[in-house]
Length: 244
Image (tube, helix red, strand yellow):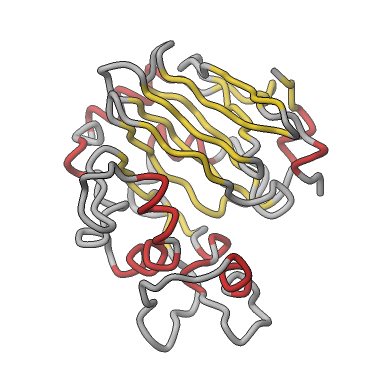
């Protein structure tokens, strides 16, 4: 599998096209453009499965995602609806919200390590949830690689996601499908000393996003940004990658 250094910062998959108008109609029909229902980044309203993920990733959620004035793990301006569900075996005890080092966070992702936390492992979130029907199901079916976690990601106007690093593409390959956006929404990746800036339009393309490097997002508009984010384990789609 290709690593972050072997891949561009941004690209798109040239053999997959999503019907954005049909997808938006589906979201309207199923009331999935009601931002109040996007509660999976808020610890108090997330279901039990995602409470474990949020707790295990609380540093990321608090330091990089939520607005400064929001309560602990209670982001208002960055929200998600999860489309996939936990399929692993839960930890014997509830996942604790506590500070941890980078090494400890890596250990939590290793199934062979005594400190492994199943709820922290995105490979355990691959079961399609009840929202994966109709146009959303059509999008899922376009991927040959195994989908590990997928969600609709809402970013309020005027808000930003601060610089952070996620998984190397050899573990999780990330794709963005913009649904609602505008040219004032900018995505950034710092790759090997060079800053890459892109506007990803809602043109039906599936965009590769190299989340293994430091990256951040700024919504400089007054409008909401909505992306469908699909994480996969596998790189079949990258055979059709066009760098941008």
